[in-house]
Picture 1: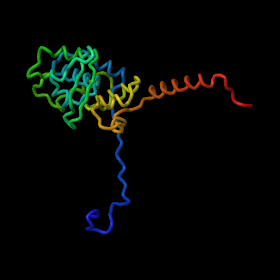
Picture 2 (picture 1 turned 45 degrees about the vertical axis):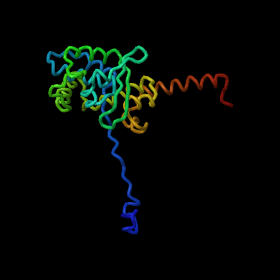
Picture 3 (picture 1 turned 60 degrees about the horizontal axis):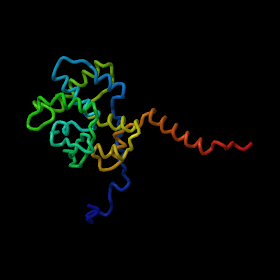
Picture 4 (picture 1 turned 90 degrees about the horizontal axis):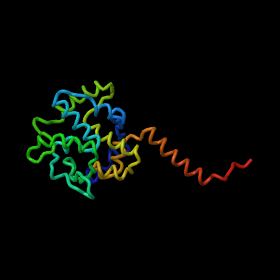
Length: 213
C-alpha cells in the first residue's frame, strides 16, 4: 500500500523480525556408527534404519531418497554418483556414493521396481520417523532426532572432516552458503583442528621471533 501511494507511511518501517534460530539435531560419528550396526530382525525397521543411514552419508532429503531411481545413478570418473534435482526446489545436486551407501543400494537391488532404488510400498515420512526414534533410543541416544536431521548430520560431519562449505552446499542443493551455515553445526572438534592448523602455520612464520623485553 505504501509502495503504491495508498498510505503515506510504511507502518512496519521500524519493525524488525528476529529469525528463530533453533539448534538442529544430528548424530555424531560415534552415534552414527552405533545406529548403523544395530541388529534388527524386522524388515520394516531395517528399511527405516538403512534409509536414515543413507541420508546421513549423502545429505539427501527423504522425498528425494524415496523418488531416487536407477537412472539418477551414473558413473563419473570411474565412481558411482547420484545426479539429480531436489524435488522441493528443483535445484540440481550431485553426490559421490561412498562404500556404506553403496552397500545399502546393493541390499535392495532384488526388490527394485519401476526403476526405484528403494522399495516404495506405503513409504512415507512419518512411517519412517516413528520407528526411527525408537531405534535411536535403543542405541542409548537421548536426542530428539527426525529424518530431516540426516541433512544436518551430513553437513556437520563433512565440515568436521575438512570438506569446504562450498562443496557441502552444492551437495545439499542449496542456492546460497547462508542456508548451508544454518544446517551445519561447527563442532568443537572442527574448531580445534582449524585453530591447531592455524597455529602451526603461524609458528613457522614466527619461529625466530620473540616478544621484546
